[in-house]
Length: 400
Ligand code: GAL
Image (cartoon, rainbow, N blue to C red; front, side, top):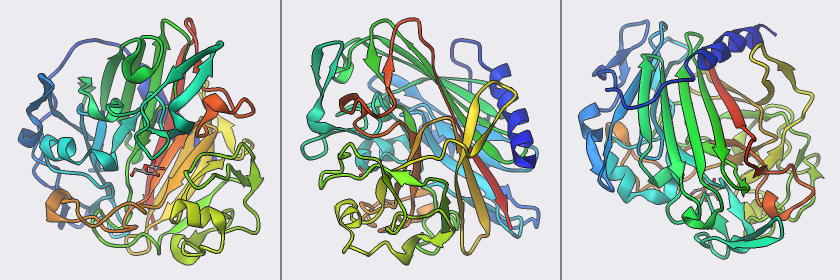
């Protein structure tokens, strides 16, 4: 409960900072970030490497700071979280998300979706097709036979309009036109990143449309709680507060069933090392996912009501085995995609001259279930004129 009280005050921050228009120059980046011991461990990227132009629009890097010395960097190219520096068990600041050190590298390495906001439909839509109000819509099939993360040029690959109202938050807005990537309706979307003084990163999304559409927007950050580029995540200890999951076929499209995790390698109801069962390919789900790449149905009772009116559930707890950094995820979304970095190839040049590697990071994509527009029994992802889309996820960091 203590944690929820702290989140409630953090949540208040985003409510207070939710207005304003136009661009504002980002705060200057500090070169280094030092932990309480004084040792320099992690460095924020150079903001100059993000002052660029993509599709004729200016890009920038926005720096968020808190009173604990934690910091984050966000670019308006794909509304991406580039860096997140939080203290480890010794107080040393550690960059816990994978990312690149320039806009150019993000443009040239689109397939990983590092740190990006993905949409209009994050995750997969079967065969790139869905019906809405009796009308069929056809989307790009950019992942084998299926549609993935909004299509060929999703929200990860467009330039958002950034505005930084203070040194601990940034707002990014994007107008997605009617018909963009095949989706109906002009969608106005806003994402707000807020770094609180209790070392929580809050990502809040809101949106409206002028025609009925579908929307499933999430953040695609890759975490390694021992520090980006520091090797395998298989010894991280993970707990997912989900009794059930949505099993998939060999193309990672849900079968439509919702099944218990009990007795499968997807049972993370008790804390367990990520790698303990990740190669259990006798299980068809592990085989299809090439490891973990599954949507977990969050236990609805595992939450509390917040002062801001939003109800968040405690979705996940995960701890870095070397750093002691603990990440607790809270969300108002019904599911979380746990993706274990099975497609990372060790070929991406990360910040600070690090490299990624196979299963060297994981994503916790808080979301609606994959392929919901084609699964009437799943919670609806439809957004209609007059409705306000609102989604909030809190990534709370601590260390022990
Ligand atoms: C994840 C998805 C994976 C893979 C990854 C990007 O969200 O579940 O299957 O596509 O994005 O490489």
